Length: 178
Image (cartoon, rainbow, N blue to C red; front, side, top):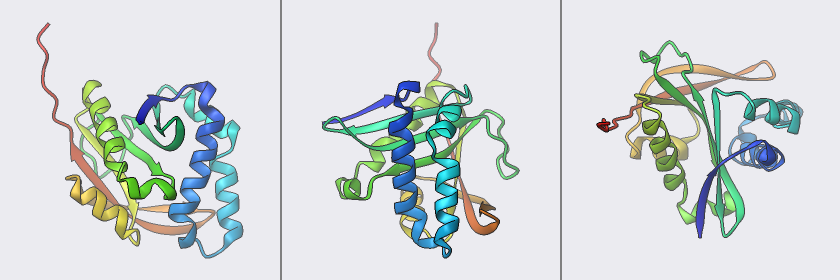
């Protein structure tokens, strides 16, 4: 059974571990200097950094479970500024990751749909994200899910720049009369 829940401070260690493993699985092979990879993981996915992130009210985390086992997560940043994004009423899908062993279950789409619905509930009109230009699997995933290429940005891992595509998608929500 698949379940997605809002992450809370009590989930910090789970998020830190999921973040570290999934980021290494999806991006680690692109980083030539493995000491840079380890430094990046240590700085960005420590329990203390994750706790700081989860306690920031602009950040929303969601954890996906398969049979009560945490297998993926997503992180939204509310109203994240980016020059390629016109809307100030947006969210950045900074992270959406599934453990490699669970990717064949094709559950990434469910997690994406879930966070899109949360964005609509929050009356956000645009969701945007960035993807490394060599990550063809992720690029295809976002294109299949109606994200449009709207620009580029460089992502730095310990001083080394990696070119990323910026994808954006309009969130269309219905107005509920009071």
